[in-house]
Length: 261
Image (tube, rainbow, N blue to C red):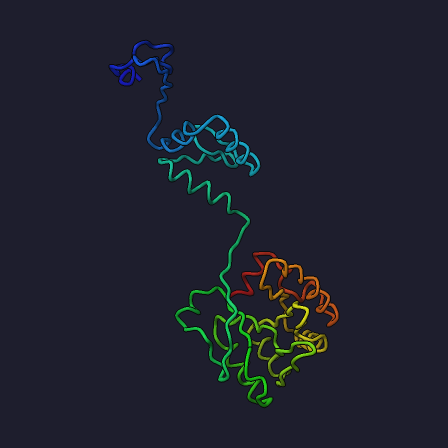
């Protein structure tokens, strides 16, 4: 503190931590341990309302914010730089939010994908779906589906029968064989909630559940308001006698991780 008070532009010392400069500005002096510099800098940066807002946000998350750092469950987090403080703040804001990277990938006629393995490797999971060549034989369609689901990133078979109500019939496949593969390899069947699809159909949902297949309900949304279609998927799953335990949407994050492995 003596070193700071020796600053030649100080006109007078009001208190040991508050001085008046020769240009009439009043300045607060704070001495900080290097490990607390980031906490101190954050605390004295911004307006009074800025600090009040930060304290309020901290309190909402069960934390206590001060010039010394952030107190969390009796542990004081100290920050050497303001960047360290901001990184911690960001991590707290994101708590409870788990982000998975998924993508719907087209299954081509031979069972391969319209996406390279290099890009597939960047995903946490893929929904693989048929969008063309629906008129193949039962054997060909079954082989196509199983080949696609054999990829390690292929977790979900999207709108499995490909039907569009009143416009396109379901494709033919050996569903017993497909369901057996899904159970053995921990793959999921989608219940697509889009009103024109409602796919799996209810009879196949019942059959799949009887084999031990797990379901996932998706809205197939192409715009925000279509997220409201979820209820149709729930109703469709119920028509096939699905219960909460059969639908992975109902899992906790911890249990969902076992599905993603």
